[in-house]
Amino acid sequence: MNRRSPAVDYILIVAGTFLIGFAIKNIYDPVSMVTGGVSGLAIIAKELWSVPLWLTNTVLNIPLFAAGLFVMGWKFIKRTLFATVMLSVSLYILPEGSYMGNDILLSALFGGIISGVGTGMVFLTSCTTGGTDMLAALIQKRMKHYTLAQIMQVLDGLIVIAGASVFGIRSALYALIAIFCVAKVTDGLIEGLKFSKQAYIISDVYGQIADAIMERMGRGVTSLDARGMYSDQEKKMLFCVVSKKEIVQIREIVAEFDPKAFVIVSDAREVFGEGFIEFH
Image 1 (cartoon, rainbow, N blue to C red):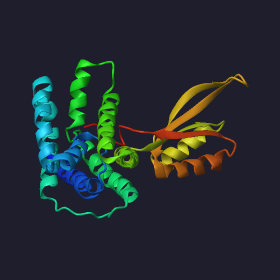
Image 2 (image 1 turned 60 degrees about the horizontal axis):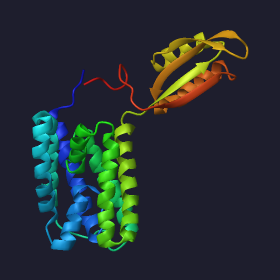
Image 3 (image 1 turned 90 degrees about the horizontal axis):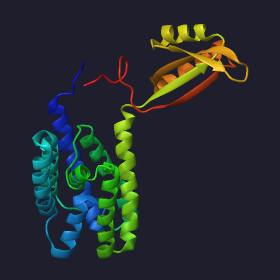
Image 4 (image 1 turned 180 degrees about the vertical axis):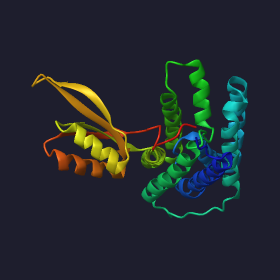
């Protein structure tokens, strides 16, 4: 099995946290956009008390990581601690600038895209940037009937509301656009790398179709026993998983042998095994 080098993971963490830091410092902060998380609290603290972003991010994370170390152990927090430190470093050393001017819509869209890419890069290494993620994990230890995502939504929602009380409801509404963009881009980056298609094929010439798929595409095919409830006849249903671009070739093969075949194509979020993602 091929394992990604730990060095590559740490490079991804550094690159990802600097993208997030850039979005916070040079896109969100200039337009007073609070998108949740400790970074959102840092923007509020800067507005109210002129505290630097990096300092608030560092100070608020210290007790969270102390609690995380006590409750969950070093193995759980070590990479997340590194990511959090790198985020504070990026907020400290990146030069200040306002690249979107006063255009709050562009700030929401491009801030969401940039921080979404950075967050996705960090998530690919199986860690987070701390903050509300860490707090949610600690709360979930005590409140196991709630999911981590539910707790995080509540925490980030409270921070967005706090931002609305300081900067106004208009800024908070645009922050929701940014949050949506972050979620979509992050999911796309993570799932897009693992995204495949699965096809179910019902045809009387299933043998010829299966042979063509295996010979021409080098993909495995599984035959499943099925029964048509309307005709009450025994049938064979073929099942195979291919990459996104290969699904076109599947359609062409099926159409060649049986234009009247019944084919179902759906998304496969993650596929592990030969020809796809190897287990780490």
